[in-house]
Image (cartoon, rainbow, N blue to C red; front, top):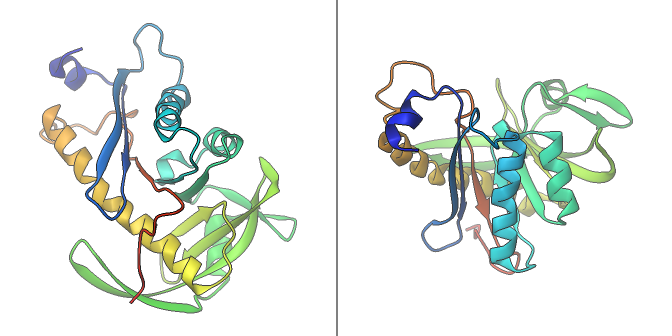
Length: 227
C-alpha cells in the first residue's frame, strides 16, 4: 500500500509504540493497515500484534504502558492484565468505574472530590499550577483487581487509571509526569501525518487513525526525579 492509497482510505489504522526513558524517544513498533483489507480482523487484534512485538523485545521484563483515552477499552485492560504488565490510561468520560461497590461515571467521581496535592508543570511551553489526588476504584471487567484513579481538580480535570498501587504524593506525581511525558511522543504522529498527507487534508482524520502512542519503561529505571 503506497501513501496515495492510505490518503484515500476511509478506515486507516496507524499504530505506533515507542520507548521513552531519560534518553531520547526510541520507536519500537510501527504499523499501518487498512480496515477493509483482506485479513483485517479488528483494531484490538492489530494493537495486540504491537504489544506482542514489544513483549518479545523486552524478553519477559515488566514494563508500563502509558496510553491515551482512545484505548480506554475493556479488551485492552484485560490483555495487559493477563500479560502482568502495568498501565496508565487516560479515562474516557463515558467510562463507568466501581467505587465502594457503586457504579459511577468517571467525571462524576472526579468532580465529587477536591485535589489535595499541589504541583507545577510545563506543558507545550505553558506553565501550570495544578491540583491532583487519587482514589481506589475497580473496573467492572476486572472486579478483583485494585486500581487507582489519579485526577486533577478544575473545570475539566484529567482522569488517569493505573493498575499499580499508589501510596502517596510521590506516586501521584510520578503518574502525572509519566502521562505528560507521553505527549512528547506525539511528535512522531505529526511527522507521519505529514508523510501520508493527512495534515493537508481538509476532511476529518479517518476513523481508525488512532490518537495513541505507547510509552514503555523498565521498572528499575527512574523516569523522573522530583526537585
